[in-house]
Length: 201
Image 1 (cartoon, rainbow, N blue to C red):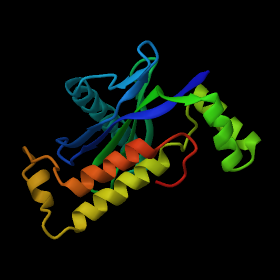
Image 2 (spheres, one colour):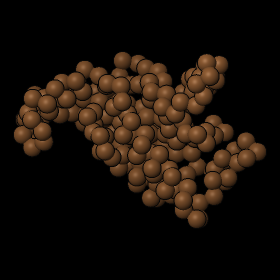
Image 3 (cartoon, rainbow, N blue to C red):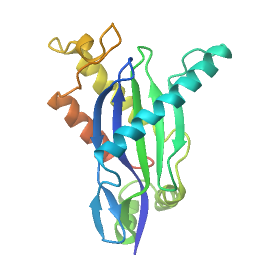
Image 4 (cartoon, rainbow, N blue to C red):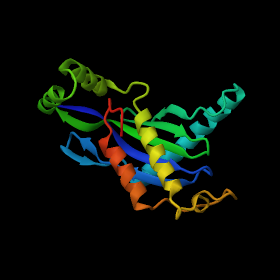
């Protein structure tokens, strides 16, 4: 018997000019075919990332009006449907990170879950985490993901051959996508290794 738990369906980085810089799409478990495939097309994920910009702007206005300033972690931006939810984080330079989570994206066999419970922590704690993951996400589950994306982004900015103005021009128009292999590999590692309860990526 298998349980479906949340997994990352898409990671996106959006520049300070609201231009898309990077998108990574991950396969999700499809119980009807017992296979893994992306739940949306690249175009649909691109439109979904664009739709989060309105939420970022509204929350930024609300924070400015209430005197909070930039909060960084915006948490849940919106639930797309019964399966997908978008979470967001904005850096102090205006770059935005978006994580689209598929609430039924990863399959866990109960036998494998029992084995994992024996190997890490008490079986009761591990069982609680798996059961909670099957129901939904707790606040703070995305923090390790945003921290890992921010670390990868900072490493990219520290590269002397990377010109941030090519990707988010000061004039505010256009910009190239991030195509660096190291950054893409870091994003792939983050998306593939995250599961609910992970504290370090």
